[in-house]
Image (cartoon, rainbow over all chains, first blue to last red; front, side, top):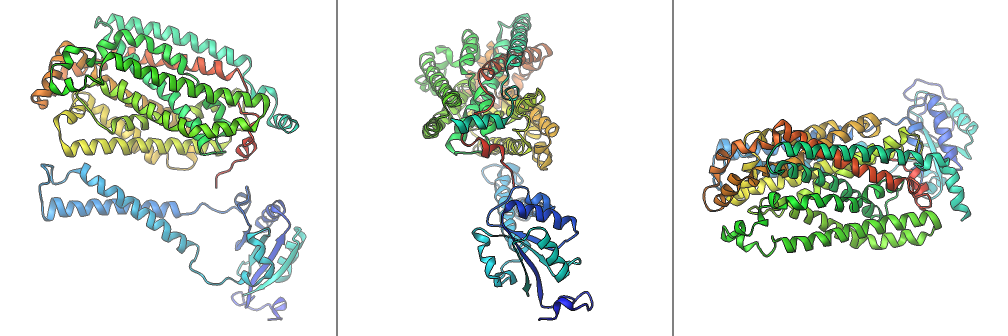
Length: 190
Length: 438
């Protein structure tokens, strides 16, 4: 794909064959500064890649709070209610049995079952949601094609803007990143 | 030493790092309030004409509450060293101040001694001989061994808290990293020791109010109630100091959030152990164990039991859950005060339902309860169960609480004004100040 830079067809296939643009920065601070500018420039589909968590980066990228807690809370509640309902159905409704002189529907005894059910469904949901929300498992990513990106787990600080972003333009976006102090800016094939 | 002095400059001016005159002022104010409130509590208690029975129970409840604050602070400081944590370095000195209160607590325990015969039925050898089960406990429940145990607890608490605080203050002076490493090295056995001491204080001072009752979870349950206190007091103390211009940019929303999380976790841990104990006793249904709950089911106490369950568990469970409740100072302050209140109510419910057992009728019924029908107990003693909830009795409890907490705070400010409000030469301090939650 050599003609992408000049192509100007319809929005969907505008940058066909292009993943986006990858910029490398020389340190955490210049990456944070660049991220703040990218956000104010109106970009939506972009991300920063760093070897370690950087204080303040989440804030300047304006990453919203994850909905994971809500999902886990819902799953945990349904786990507990499900366990209680099962205990009620078995012990108190369908086949009432007396255990050591306790009432059919004795909440203290059934809480002991409801609590692990709550924990189990919450934990399993949390574990599964990490895969779902992170779109895993995934065996390949276009950024892995870039040789310099290997340093992201060592000493490389990267910012990638994806071609699907409405503001994306191979020329202007690359120019913007260069003006923000990127050490190198390269287009990434999909 | 150059690095260390530069660090001090970075931390802010002397006015922000030391209490200076404000410490002495607050010490005077709290000491005044404390002495007046305790004198008033004694007056109100004496006016009840019950041989100071209610006063002793109120005083013991308040003393246990203060003990819980100091003991949990000590546990927090040791835990900080043991886990080599860095976020809590900024509040370490404040916790050391709260943990340094065991000498005054020992002095304030002295007024309980003349009331021991009223508080603890096992002080009477005649009572202990009234049933075979009680007779078998004489080896543990006797005044001499009790005094020995108390002396050991006091030695452990005072010795360890003095060491933790003085080594930290000495590091402020000479900046030797070795002192911090020593603290970390010793923290392991200190942690275990203090864990057991808190458990045993719960068993000795609270559980033995009912000598017929034994629950192996009760000391751990007491430990859970105790451990929470420091996380409710520390944020309030930090907020008060910040309102007075101290530590302004040092303790941030990140530190408050962590303290709030711990507060939340301990409140839930309290529920976990409380429920574990209740469920097992409910299931086994043995008369000498269910007695504890039957008493707390009598008359007004059942309302307090339910209110405690709601206020200490259900309401914070959902109310404290949003992140902002731990990050925004007024919201966190609200939950700290809320849980301090319910923490006190918890100790109140552990101790004061036993007031009836200190009466002549109660003693008789307690001896009988062991041999005969425990289910006869609640109805025959329902009138006595009300005693700690009469207005004058409640006033005694309130005045004792205000008095002892004020004296505790007075001594805390006395300790805090002696040094910097931060471990200024702690090598982990910069990391702690820059700490951020993800």
